[in-house]
Length: 399
Image 1 (tube, one colour):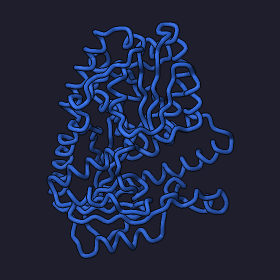
Image 2 (image 1 turned 30 degrees about the horizontal axis):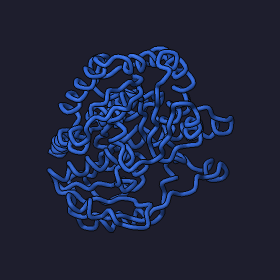
Image 3 (image 1 turned 135 degrees about the horizontal axis):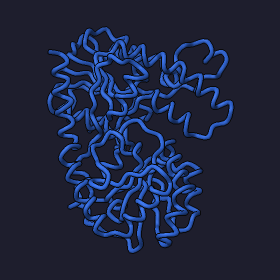
Image 4 (image 1 turned 135 degrees about the vertical axis):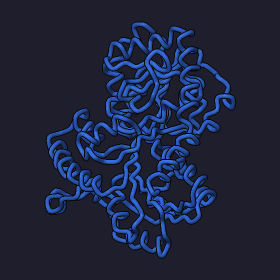
């Protein structure tokens, strides 16, 4: 088949979870089909073009800068489009995309995330449109609204955007040939709150087993019991999860493991995250050249996340490297990883602290979960297998 891929960013280098998904699915589709790739590019350079040309027939990076967030009056009040979509509006994108498509015929158009609907819906093509969702916007923003501590004005603005977003989501869902989501929770929410009759394909996030090969990074455990938290540190689910953990669970863990160390690894640490580095035994690294050595020195990784949507790449990557994981249920949603078989799951402060404590004090538990988790990830969650699954699904759509 000939497939057009349209992305709201250049998914490279692979320093964000959404980039891992977008890049690897593009590469895997390129193994089985002929693909053209159109990306919005907020960088002044196209230095990453050769990476994508290896598996694409044609590639275009279009210069892009997000619009300013619209003011309440008149911009927001006089439009039915949610501001989280207009933030991705730029007048020259649609003409450039139409020119890129030109006279080319496509069997299917695959685009990433809701913000690109405003462009792909106006392409002159009869090809079915499929949206791959790194997260379901309505679900994500609803959970942010319920979890984050917001001032009155911000709560009002978010409520206004949610009302418009729900209408926009339903309009788009009815026009799509199919939607691809990261997990069954995303599908359940979408059917209940967006469009019950939607055609939905659940495709989890995965791992590049050659990059995350533990044989390339021998285990070098830290001398003291060490827990890792890895992710982009200005991302609200990561920030709120860490704040919850240190407020509610870490004091309990310290009573049991007073010499515990915690590594917070990831780029762009928000002020709230930087402040955590002042806690004894806590290190905030910021961005690092390679996160794999940090996984291999940690005794365990934690994912104390309270905001869902999508699948947590940090979990499958950690498991692939052989670092066992403690997570909330929301943090591990969408993954077939079972409590006390592949992972430890806990949702209350006491049980979460207890699970981390068990992991740090029980060598046998760590070893058992590390091996079982790794086997499960390699069996179900490699990008090669997930990409073939998506390819077969797309072939079935156009038959």
